[in-house]
Structures are given as C-alpha cells and as structure tokens.
Amino acid sequence: MELEVIQNKIFEVRGCRVMLDFHLAELYGVETRTLKQAVRRNSDRFPPDFMFEMTESEYNSLKQSLTSQSVISNERGGRRHMPFAFTEQGVAMLSSVLRSDTAVKMNIAIMRTFVMMRRLSAGYEELQRRIEELEISTDTQFNEIYQALTKLLSKSEESSAPRRKIGYRTSED
Image (cartoon, rainbow, N blue to C red; front, side, top):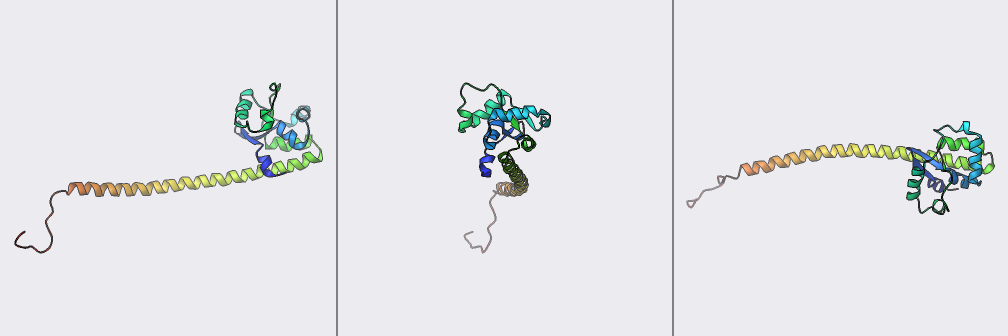
C-alpha cells in the first residue's frame, strides 16, 4: 500500500498524530467492531498515551474538515460510540493484538509512514528556524538602510538654503 494513502489517514488530535479505529480496521481488513473488541479485551496494553476515545466535539471538528472522505461522510444515523484514536505506539501495540499476516504487513507500512512524517516534520522545523534567522538578519539590514535614508533626507531638508556657486565667475554673476 502506498505511504501517501496511509499518510492521508493520520490526523492531529490533542496535539498527537493519530489514526482512527475505522481507518485501521479498513487497512487491516477487519471490521471496526472486531478491532475495538480486540482492544477492549487487551485494554492493559493501551494506556492513554497509546490510545484514547475521541470526544464528540473532537470527532465533529475532524468530520467537518474531512467531509470529502466517504468513510466519514456516509455514516447513517450517527455513531453510537466515538472512534478510538491510536498514537504511533498504539498502532504498534495493535500488531500484538491482531496477529494476521495482513495486520503485520500493514503495521510495518504504517510505522514507515510515521517515521517518514517525523523526518519531514524535523526538516520543516529546521527550515522554519532558518527562515526566522534570515528574517532577523534582513530586518537588521533594512533597518540600517532605513536609518541611512532618513539621515540623508533630514540633511537635504536642513540644507535647503541657497548654495554658493562653484566655478568661474563672470562679470554678470
């Protein structure tokens, strides 16, 4: 499976990158209720920093931003239970709960996607830092230019008195 497909199923919720239970179930080739059932049976393996149940407001705000995804927009009659959101560690823990070959292969692909996103994020942070440094240095340079221009303009206003002519004088001068 393409990393981009998996990357499109990773969202930011509560400041964490997470995958939702129904997306994971789709990727693993199982029903969402089967995945949730396996997680509930092994709840000791999923502390809050590995997996949490989304609140209705979190889910609704996520749903509004993803109306183009048919999995979310085609729900009929609403949800009885809010989706589970799995962090990277929670997804890794799922491989010990769901032991099928598909789950193992998919977990490897998902882990690679999380690693790739982390690298991209680190590169973005470095780029952001460099841009900020560049802004500071150019602000300083433009400030110096502005001050020099201001001085030149103020000198030209001061010296608006008539100047003495330079050069040869004729009798007409």
